[in-house]
Length: 323
Image 1: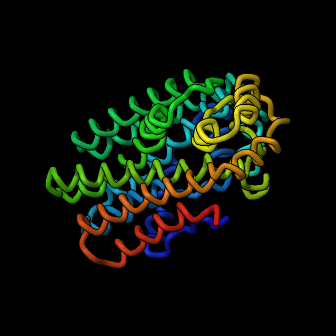
Image 2 (image 1 turned 60 degrees about the horizontal axis):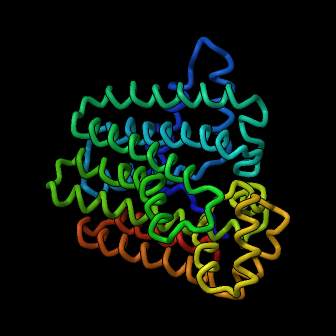
């Protein structure tokens, strides 16, 4: 699997983002700092903050608010991870024990709330009402996506359209916010800002499609979480949706039973079915289609520069992780 490296064009700005995040973790309550630092420093790709910084620089932004807002995006993302791990009852993330496994669910939820509220304190400091409104709308959409995903659990009748709606809300929204920030800061036109929203959304969907494919083709060390977590959580992701449409009647029954029961032991059987009916190829091809949409928008709306090239490379890396 290809890992997404930190971009050297924005090394100093990324360092400033990390410094700001560390400042925001300060609290007189030791558990908050301890648990927050566990997740913040557990090897995340910083993909969303990189997107904020690269887009801002690509549009020629000369201020410092992109650093502040990149930190906001990462804090929002981190808070959702804490909540996700509780909802999913996960024990491993990025190859390390999850916060809820080390502490407990209550601590993870409450510290996630702290990071979420801290992100809003920080975004207000940027003193940019359009960005504040956009981020407020984005965080609300993310929450809606989480609820949609919860409602689709253990449901083998989930459609591809419903699944893509979940990805659009849950993952695409924060990527869209990250991509729009630079355009808003650089006072680009309404059409350009909307194009960047669409760009980020399609990139986010492509990224999540690959993540969902990896749950059925990666090893645990590469994946950074326990194999079959999606299955155990009853998540009806695209590899299974496609397989349910193209596998034999007996194979479909195997998938339906495994999903309904969250039966991780059925994973080897499901992997064989998914590979046989071409579900992984279909999923990765759809991810590449979304990535191509993102690249088309990128080339049409951001002037040529080393920063645009870096964003283009980031898109490619995001969807080549299963190659």
